[in-house]
Image (cartoon, rainbow, N blue to C red):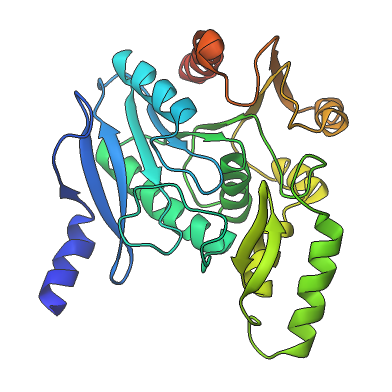
Amino acid sequence: MAVKRLLLALLLVLWGAAAQPGSARMQLEVTPGLLAEADYWPGAADKAAVLILHGFLQTREFPTVRRLATALADEGYSVLTPTLTLGINRRSQSMACEAIHTHSIEHDVNELVRWLGWLGNRTGKAPIVVGHSTGGVQLVALLSSRADLKVESAVLISLSYFNESGDAGDAPGQRARAAAALRRHDGPGEVGPFQLSYCREYVTTPALLLSYLAWDGDRLRTALHRVGAPVTVIAGGDDERLDRQWLDDLRKSGAALQIVPGANHFFDVAYEFDLFDEVVAVIEGDARG
């Protein structure tokens, strides 16, 4: 068993059956005994390497992520779309709000570190990272805390934080309740129902909940300015989930912000080509720069 685990750690990946035409199903041991999965499209030697991350509790099969990944792969880019395990071995389905959640944003960041290392080693290039919705928060949490990571740039699509006005419940109230529960107990606290993002019943411990709620708009805006790589935020003009004042403040602070008129939070089929064009403009801009 020890030899097998050592080999797995050294190789980092097991080749599986093809998940999509031109892609391969990858597996990576992110912690001892916990396997994460991703789809990978190898690209041309002169094209960028791109990691695309899904939103909260979703998977690499989420339509916004899948459409963008296949379109970039068709253009010859190397594309990796991991699914965060959320503590579940080889997770391949979206996770229900009412399930017991044993993951934290720190766990998510640690998995992303492993996948970025894998992609950089595989391609010999500093990757470009792309996140959809709260996937952007997890990428910012990663990049602002790990200055040693080699990343070319970041593209954050429909960037959402964990207590915006469109979220389920009252985030300050949830934060106060979780903090009070921690004061009553040792350790992370007892598992119970809370509210987080779009989940009106999110079952977790107070400590794990707070790991996400800590990433509010103020912290996210501050962290964005600590990211060493260039960052572009792309938002839909008709995205009702976004805090417009926060986006305006972000623009005033000097962030690169692109608005796609008419697009919603998911850049549905009518706007998928607009999203693709915006992402490619960032990628090719970096390549020319």
